[in-house]
Image 1 (tube, rainbow, N blue to C red):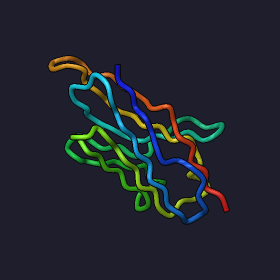
Image 2: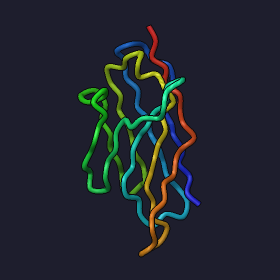
Image 3: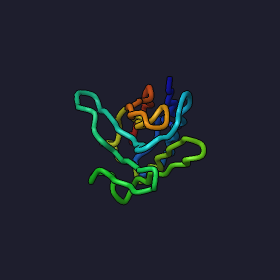
Amino acid sequence: QVQLVEFGGGLVQIGGSLRLSCAASGRIFSIYDMGWYRQAPGKQRELVATITRGGSTNYADSVKGRFIISRDNAKNTVNLQMNSLKPEDTAVYYCHANVALAWGAGTADYWGQGTQVTVSS
């Protein structure tokens, strides 16, 4: 019913920048919280950053001051600008959206397929 597609992962050197984008499509009435999570090999998935429909943001301590999350409600997109990248940022990054499919309906969580970000020297 709802698909999230991520773009922008890749290989970058230490200190470099990448921009991730995610577009939601399908049967969408409204999208509430959107965000990015990541999972490194052998580790649990962790929150990177979230943003409410109104634009309030929340960041993991490890990325504060380096990453910026933004969204376009009209286009159902969320972006993650990643600066000053470190090797420990290497992970698969997943887009998340909390979506209402109809007025008065409950919400459901949807995830993208993930995009690999690798930071190397």
